[in-house]
Length: 69
Image (tube, rainbow, N blue to C red; front, side):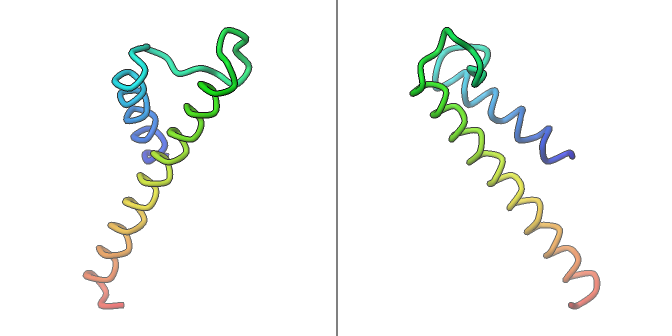
């Protein structure tokens, strides 16, 4: 759950820097084209995947250090 919050915050900042807009387009927004919506979804998915992998990896390493397994 914490990972989702972290990923969401990172995505919001990345989108602000990349697009110059405060909010990313929603898939149902009529004011955005397919390209912008799909790019936003791809970036959001990549960031979520990276955060999840980082959390999983650090949890695994910590568990291994604590138990030796």
